[in-house]
Amino acid sequence: MRLPPAILANAEEVLREILRFSAPADTTLSRYFKDHPRLGGRERGAIAECVYNVLRNKSFFTDFSEAGGGPTMRRLTLLGMADAVGIESMGGLSEEEVQWLERVTQIDRKLMHKSMRSNMPKWLFDKLVEQCGEEETLLLADAMNTPAPLDLRVNSLKANRDDVAAELALAPIRSTPTPFAPLGLRILQKPALQNLPLFKSGAIEVQDEGSQILSQIVGAKRGEMVVDFCAGAGGKTLALGAIMRNTGRLYAFDVSEKRLAKLKPRMARSGLSNVHPVQIAHERDAKIKRLAGKIDRVLVDAPCSGLGTLRRNPDVKWRQQPGAIAELQVKQAAILDGAARLVKGGGRLVYATCSFLNEENDFIAEQFLANHPDFELVPMNKVLAEQKIALEMGDYLKLLPHKHQTDGFFAAVFERKPMAKPAKPAKDAAPADEAADDAAG
Image (cartoon, rainbow, N blue to C red; front, top):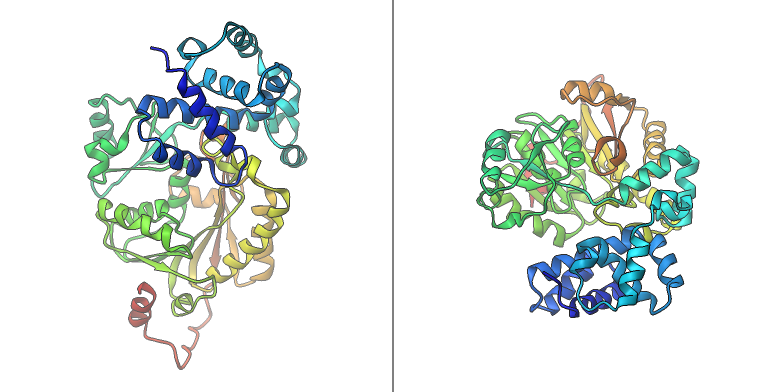
């Protein structure tokens, strides 16, 4: 069944706005669909896929659109939609457009010039070539320009992986266990999960396998005090709470009230009662100071370029600017320094990003160790062995889509050296229980 010709016009309209890069693509798409309620599910899906195809393949598509005659934006839209639904499913094409699409879609993109094949801005391509070589960069680019599968995390408080897989199969939704995360399931199709009883009951959450592995390497245990320092909407918070078996005390810190608000309905669905969302003003907030030296595990999933998520958010590579990386480094170092104050002697601090740039990863970890002699690096191979995760790593966790089929993630684990004797509490320090209650508020 062909899409109505008007859908191409809709796709072109929203694509024009998205290519201004004034806001994230998913935000612009959501607003557009809200403003056009008469678009059906199939039409929305085709428009969204068209947009994301253009964002993934912008260099390649733009080159052929500008050389093909006719309005460039129309031709960009045609290429994106052809990748999404196929030429035969597109209504409203002229004979010339059909012929042009057939010629372009038959081109083997791997034979194109390396910079065009990568579909990356030049600054990013050059930086990655310098960091890991041209061949590895092209393999990474090919993986980043492929849509990500849908990964689920099974909530171990409510279900087990085998039972969830069996129930999904009845839907029918085929899934396979993720190779590294013990509670992950990978789905190759894109079903409407929000309508499934499994989702409504909190038995499953959407979470990339890489993110699940990050939660696992924190090593949180029953009864501990744990902080998710940059919790956001709480995907890793929920995973940590389940790993802790709903015991102990888990703080979800974030500067954004809006992001924390999104966590609350997810908490209710998950069945967790050990999570305490806390809005903070900055990494030196007094609510953090009250918990200094009391926390067993701290996860810092730091604000970063987000370049590791390009399979899901391809607009990031076009919106991100090289100058922003230096600004992010300052913020990352400050946040890690603030979070380190929470860690008790013998406790662990995990620094993570969803980036593959050394400036945001190895550099920040090494700078932290140089400035904090009371912490030492725990090699990632040791951490993974503790968690029985069958991944080969060196000192750091470096997950890459072309090697591990996850988003791009980095993590370093630090341990605070046990103090020779307990530090004397400050005269104005609150008792531990009272301090915990203050921070929760």
